[in-house]
Amino acid sequence: MADLNALKQKYAPVLDTLNSFSEYGAKVDSVDLDGEKLHIKGEVPSTVIANRVWDVIKQVDPTYSDLEHEIATTGGAEQPYTIKPGDNLSKVSKLFYGNPNHYTEIASANSISNPDLVKVGQQINVPVLS
Image (cartoon, rainbow, N blue to C red; front, side, top):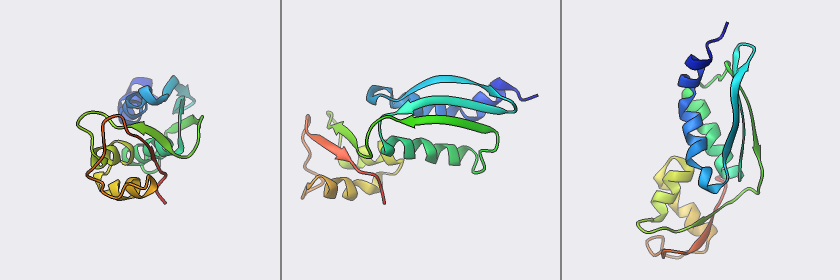
């Protein structure tokens, strides 16, 4: 018999990632056992965030053989984002991709000629990495 608490602990980084994007519309609807697997049901607002969650799943366990997930993507591919105080495109890249080095892709997708010049309140779209 699978241990629900042990599986929740193992996949805590996945649940933490989903919860960290709650301000953008990500949510966890349920976490329970489905036979011998942890079952996570929830939703994310974009393919960008779905890919970030998927990356975390693979970091926890590349085979994810003890995980069953139903994580629906409710919006489009890109993730809208509003620049906050202290932000730069590297921080945005780290948040959405787990890697700060994709800031140039964000700049290019938003026609930002100088990635160092973003303004608080500026609306951007974080693209899906190809």
